[in-house]
Image 1: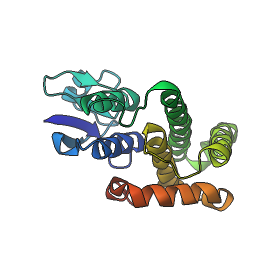
Image 2: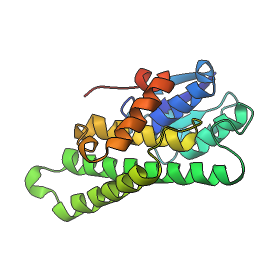
Image 3: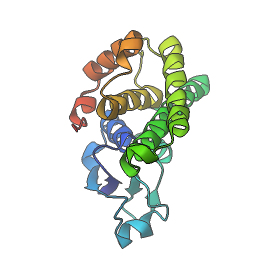
Length: 201
């Protein structure tokens, strides 16, 4: 049995969980909740960076980050399932990179809110991260909001990014991006693991 070190709110961990479900590998993975702010010694031995998600294989080898893990899971499932071949591969990986960038910027915004009192927050830093999110959402609205013919790592990552914005920022992105709302509704209908991995609060 593989072990996924993650945390329920982590959008990157959610990406791995959804990928595993789409690939019919979820029953081969045990999810172990991990607090990166209070990491245990075993976790730091598995990932010196102390970051989630980390996948511990049956032989004790570890893989991180989410992009490496989903590549491994796709190969384990036979290859070409959620990471396509040819030019489609690069389209999917490019969309994954865009979505991962949204998640990175959103998490950095959350750190600023959680770790600094309001009077100590740096507005320029917050605006800088929000600018990344806004530009990426505009691009996704223009180029990636049509219902996907196939579920791949790009669409999985985009759904997780939008889900994280719903979780942490009250879905304020939705009003300006109706096509992405339609994309996410379609994704949720087609991928039951999206609802199954949703957390509240």
